[in-house]
Each structure stands twice: as C-alpha cells, then as structure tokens.
Image (tube, rainbow, N blue to C red; front, side, top):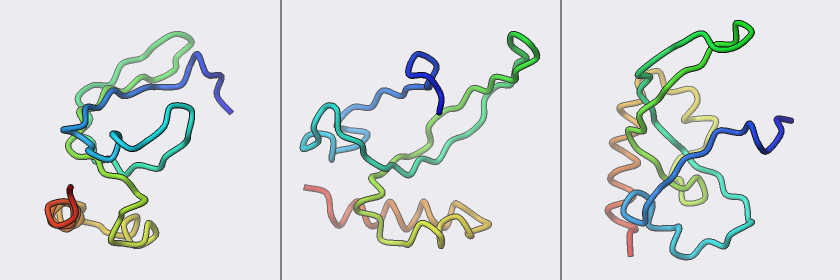
Length: 92
C-alpha cells in the first residue's frame, strides 16, 4: 500500500459530484472517473509521472452498470453517455 503522503488526490465540487453533500469525512467511497492523459514526464529515479484531466466522475454506488461490464467496454464514450443519462434522471 502506498503511504498516505504519496497518494494522489483530487478535488471535486458538489457541481462535479452532487453526492458529496451527503458523504462524511473519513469514510471511503468508490468513484468511476473518465480521464484524458495530458502529460507524461520522467520523475526521480526513472519513475514515470502522468497528468490527467478529469472528463467525468460519478459515484460507483449509484452506477447503473456492473463495474466488470464497464471495464469490458472498449468504447468508453458509450459508458459516459449512459452515466450522464443516469445522473440526469437521478440527481436531486
């Protein structure tokens, strides 16, 4: 397991992910995130470091599809359309 000081972090607003309004600090949550890689650099000791732009994010707890099914989708744009439609229907 990676030390806490080395774990990557993301910052989201309730506009990005409305569910955070009901979540509690210290709890763990599963997210489905679609990203676009925007950079790749070689860091210390030859370790590669990548930069990503978040394209979309949603709670896996409200996911209309099984995670295994999502992982098997070759064209993730199909999933993103389904996730967007699901969010529109179920947002408070």
